[in-house]
Length: 356
Image (tube, rainbow, N blue to C red; front, side, top):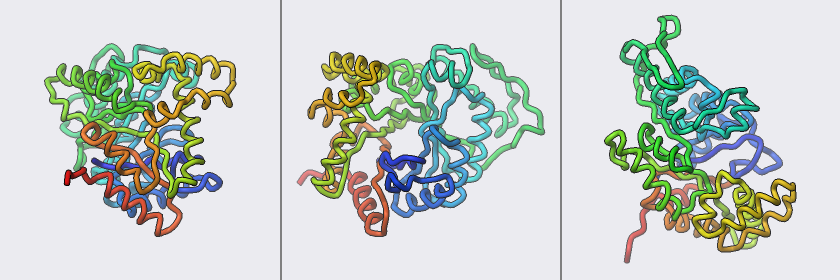
């Protein structure tokens, strides 16, 4: 199992700095180097307050072995050709260490924040990935650009805008997904699927993997060709006393997910549909302080992995070994002892259990 770290900017969720000293753009290169020194397999950036591709250029230029990637960048506001260029440049800069994670964003943001017309996201994403790969094929193999689909018609590539072949042209593409249609598209055209923290082990087994296999069958692929990547909601601390404070924050995060209709499928699978609908009402009425009260201990420990540093590796292995190829995980790192603690946890996460 590969272990990745999400380096957040402007927040700790969790990250490599204390909340009062959030990671800034100028610190990103050092943060990526620290993740590499700690033994993580990849450092990832989400698209929220800063451009992920620019941040990853800083990280790639100041590391040599760790993977770099987006988890995730928004696809639809960018043309496939624009994203293809950003990925191509980062793949060159990193000497083949780049991973492109893409997400759709929801209708309101596509229409009202980005100013695009909305369309069914799963077919749109399928066209997007195939169009982007057509551009890469044109650059790498001098194949005439000729891609036509419902959403894109690409047939022009002049020498001035053609960067030409690179040493590592196979750029892995991962898709963020939770619903059955997008999971199937990931199985059909992507190299991996990046799951939301709300996806429980049961949800992965009963909802994600069957949809992924259905999509893979469309392309006559084996489901094992598609990496399953999980971004767990993790609550961890060095001891039980410190963990109590972390649990309060984790419970509030679970409550937020509970109130979000897009994630209701998971809660309904576990029999918590009524709580999810009640949470949505509280959210609409801005009664945020009441939301955590809807999260029972059973729900908390089903959705989130909660344990001290000594036990968190066992908790993560129990949940995801055999289900996921990659997980995202990080703890605050402030000194050399913290680096060693993180490295020890990572080694334990990667090591399969053996029976005595």
